[in-house]
Amino acid sequence: MKGCKMSDESQELAGVFRHIDAHREAFIERLIDYVRRPSISAHGVGIAEVAEFISGVLTDNGFNARVMPTAGWPMVYGERLEAEGAPTLLLYGHYDVQPPDPLDAWVSPPFEPTIRDGRLYARGVGDNKGQHFAQILALESLLAVRGTLPCNVKVLLEGEEEIGSPQMPAFIAANRELLKADLVITSDGPVDESGRSTINFGNRGVLSIELQATGANRDLHSGNWGGVVPNPIWTLVHLLQTMKNDQGEVTVAGFYDNVDPLSPLEKEALGKLEVDLDEVKRSLELTDLDQPLERGFFERLMSWPTFTINGLHGGYGGPGSKTVLPHEAFAKCDIRLVESQTADDIFEKIRAHVEAHAPGVKLIRQGSMDPSKTPLDSPYAAPIIRALTAVHGEAPILEPTAGGSLPNYVFTKVLQMPAFGVPYANADESNHAPNENMELDRFINGIKTGAAMVTFIGEMRG
Image (spheres, one colour):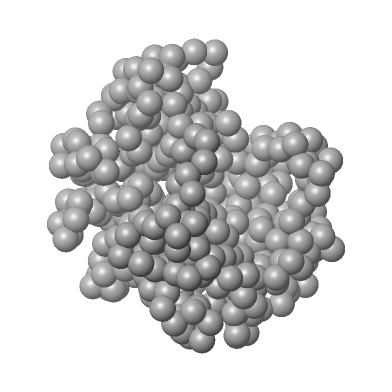
């Protein structure tokens, strides 16, 4: 604040930044050592070894750390609780990575980290090893310069984020006291496409379903049986038509009951987000966006639920024609949810709709995550904004909600704490794709940002 005397913690931060710059090459070498270790949750490759490795890194930094088993892959947990009267920060990340396929699309092997043009290429470097390792090195740097941490810190690293975090709800519920904190910060995903740093205050939830329709006990000749035997593809087409109209409105009864209006702060934040709609349409070769056309781009992505048909399958799809009357059809769909909707409530409304309009269709619930939102005026937003501004020289972009889905509801709804997303990776990190990468300057700035966040949060003493 202009005119205010800088705190001792803030003065020390300059020394922490010098320490980070002095250890830049060593930190990069350690990142390389980390990301060359495979930890593919989908295949179970390297999970136990990497969990022990990163737990050891926490232990080496004076954390009370351990690998905690679950019904699936283990969690890694560590804590240093020595800052009496200061807030407690929970840092969340995941040590598992996506499979590297297709291997022939990689310029350099996915687990042989390679530096090219100021970027480190390796599977998991952006998603999420490089980002949570930056947080750990930030804590290490603070300890090296000042001997203690400015606030209490807990670290939780998951081993199943890339397969949908199936153990998170039960683990969080069973360890409420252990994980109790004042706020949680996740550094994952990319910054804004402009390159500016970002703070994300929430994310939409998701509910995935499958609709199955059946007719006869086998495929039939369409000339001999068409018009007599029901066609399950038409059954699904008619059902789906009752679920969303041509104005873009989901017509399932009660679907919008719990959609909250935007707050004044959210409207203000959305108004500051920039997008070139003509460029979006040009790049996607579109003439128009989906209905309703009067709704704003970011308002659609952040503030409204959706109903998407992911795939509609049945019958013959090969070359030429085949006059077949199919005996079964499938539709896979996802519903993106906004605060204050829940996956359970929306599923029950869809079930009632299917029973009313197509009682013979089978509805199968697949994965789901509830939405999450932290108010823009949370008191913990200020030190995070201050930290990003100190490192990058400009204020971050504030995103009320991300369009995608993450399991942050376990923090905001189960543990009742505010949750913030502070990504460090470049917008073109190619996470989940071949040639995943992270700009090394962003990795180093991530370490500085982590140190600044912990420092400024530590100043919020009761």
